[in-house]
Each structure stands twice: as C-alpha cells, then as structure tokens.
Length: 185
Image 1 (cartoon, rainbow, N blue to C red):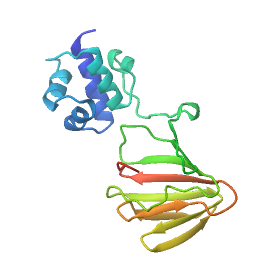
Image 2: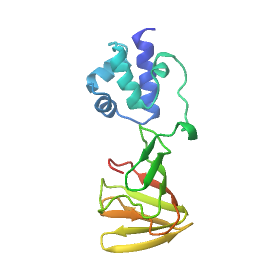
Image 3: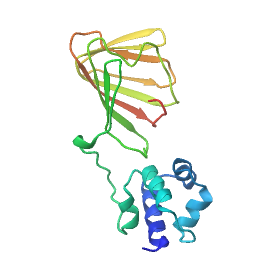
C-alpha cells in the first residue's frame, strides 16, 4: 500500500475525530510537519510510528492501511471496555475511548465504604456530571456535602476540589461524565 493511501486514512480519521494535526502529533510523538507530510503523501511512516498514530486516533493499525470510509460512530463493546479497579473500593469502566471529542464517560461502582480517595482532588476546567443509578453517594465539593440517591444528578466544575464516597451498606452504581475530557478525570 502506498503512503498516500495511509496518509489519506490518517487524514480521514483525524478529521472525523476533530483532532488538529498538532494534537495528533503530540499524542503520537511526532511533529505536526510529519503529520502534514504523511497526510499529503510526501512522507511514509514506519510501522512503529503508524502504531502510535493509530493508538492516538483510537483505531487499529489495520484501519490505517485499509482504505475506506471512516465510520461516523465509535462503539465500545461491553466486553471490551477498559477497566480501572482502584484500591479504594472503586471500579471505573470506560464507556468512551480516546481520542475523546467533547465528552468522556464512565460507568462506576463504589463498594460500601469506598471512595475516589482519601482527599478531595481537582483537575482541568470542565463540567462533571454524576448520575446515581443505584445506591447512595456522598459528594464533597470544597466544604459543601451533598447526599445523593438513585436517580439524583449533580453537576459541578472539575476545578473545584471534590471527593465521592459511598457511606451506605450496598454498592453504588453511577454514570460519570466529564465535558470536555480532562486529565485525571
């Protein structure tokens, strides 16, 4: 396959993901100039570089080497979700995958007595939305405390120090959203 075909696929995926050349370059560890040259067929990439570009675009290497339309939707299958299990009794299932557009979303389970950690934390400058599906949680924002039950929602800036815990005797289930996505969310 010629570099221009690969470059065209990179361009199509980057455009569909609403990524700038600079954002893709930073995520893949290459220069913006290289991305531009690759997309226009003036440069070829090594397999290692193509893997980094594919990872940054949230696709497989085969997606870059097989020409074709870029799907408008991205699907995260339930059995293929990335999972983060923390020592503090909290498990996070990633419902969206990088590269993120405007939203990053998780399914979260917090065991009885579990929490986001011992201290309040903050990150980025986004909005966070929590929807309690089952159980109860305590949300601490600065010095304010909010008790939420099934069906309750809270929205707050991620820049405010916050902590979420489960004071109840059953597992709490949540949907957690950051918009736009933030590091540490």
